[in-house]
Length: 415
View 1 (cartoon, rainbow, N blue to C red):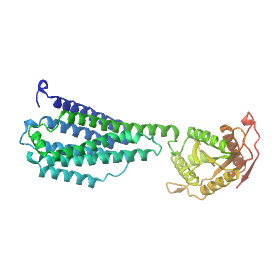
View 2: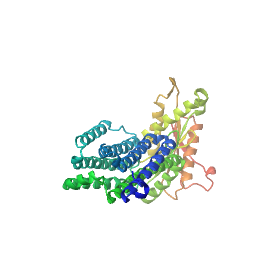
View 3: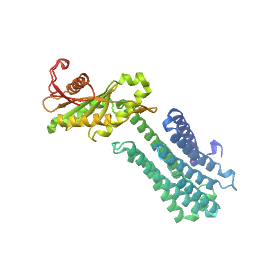
C-alpha cells in the first residue's frame, strides 16, 4: 500500500472503509457481549464487517503481490461476508440456517474464482462474483422483511422497506456491474491488470452500501429491543400473559367499541383456591408451575377476541368483549371445569387445583373500568365464601355508587 501522502482518492476512500468496517466489527462484538439473546447473530455480523474490511485491505495491497490471486480472494471474502449476514438473520429469528445452501454457494463461487483466476479471465470472475453477491443481497432483503413480519405483524409499514432498501440497491448495482463487465470485457481486463478495477464511483458505492447495510442491521436490533421492552412493560414475566397495564388499555379500547355499537363487555376474575397451600406444601417453584399451567389453560379456552391477563398474585382477569352475563357465565364454567379436569403435577406429585370465578358485565350507562373489575372481584369473593370451586355472577355492575366498596352487589353462584 502506498504511503498516505501518495494515496489516490480511490485508495483513500477504501482506507476509510477499512477503518469504518473495523469500528463496525467492534460494535457488533460489543453488542454480542451485552445482548446474550442476540449473541450468535451479532457475532456473525461482526464477521460480516471484518470480511469486508479484509477485502478492502487486500485490494489496497494487491500491487505488492502481483503473482498472488488477490482479486479472486477479494471476491470470495465479499461472498462469504454476505453469507454471514444472511445466516445471522436466520439466527436472530431463531430459525435453523440453510447451511447446505450456504456451503453450495461458497463452493460454486470458489470454483468460479479458481477456474477464472487469470487476468485474461477476470471479466468472467467479476461477473460471477457480482451475480452471486447480488443474489445474496436479495436473500438478505427478503429475510429482513420476514424477520420484521415475524417479530410483529403490526410493525410500522415503512420499516421493512427502509431496512431492506440498502440490500435491494446493492443487488441492483451488482447486477449492473455484471452486465457492464460482460459488455466491455477488454476494458475490465485492462483495468484489472493495472489494479484499477474499482473506480471512485465504485469505491464510494461500496462504502455507502456497506455502511447502509450495517445501519439496517442496527435498526433491526433496535426494533427487536424496543419490542422486548414493550413486552416487558405490558406482559407478566412468569406467565407471559398481559399484565394489569395491558388489561387496562384493552378495557379502555373495548369499552369505546362497546359504547359505540351498544354491545356488552364482561369480565371474569379467576382465583386459585388455597394457593398458599401449594407453595407451603410443594414450594414456590411448584406454585410458579401451577400459575404457568393455569395461564396456558385459560388462554386456550378463551376466544381470539378475548384477553387473559394476570391481575396479580394468583388472580387472573379475563375480558370478554361482546359477551352478555349469561355468556360470561358459560365461559367461566367452561374454564372452571377445564381446570378441574386437568391433572396438575409437580415432580411426579399430583397437585389438586380448583378455581373460583366471579363474573360481571357492563351493558349500559357510563363505563367505569374500576366498577367492572370491582363487581367481578366481589362476585369472586362471594364464590370464595360460598364454598369455592364455583362461578358467581354479579347482577349488575354499571353504574355503581361513588363508593365502590360500599355498593351492594347481588349475585348467584353455580357449582
